[in-house]
Picture 1 (spheres, one colour):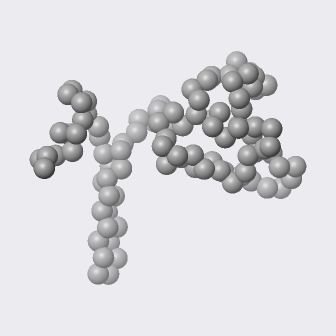
Picture 2: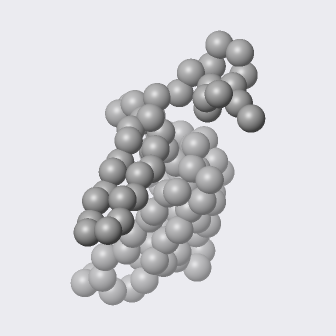
Length: 96
């Protein structure tokens, strides 16, 4: 058994973590969350992507394909959109 998480990482690779501790009567929950720099595009490193809606002519997986569109109408490498015909509905995207 390794002595620390770093023994699982490639040589020279380091990862920072944020510790989260939740205490409620009789229960203590602890977890480590990887610390991500503010300028990191988490879409490119997410394991899972979820959304409340994808427009039928769009593709959810285009959201993290790494392509940087030249303008708002550039869908040459796919595009994500969530318009459902209703102006009163908000949709969401979640990365895990």
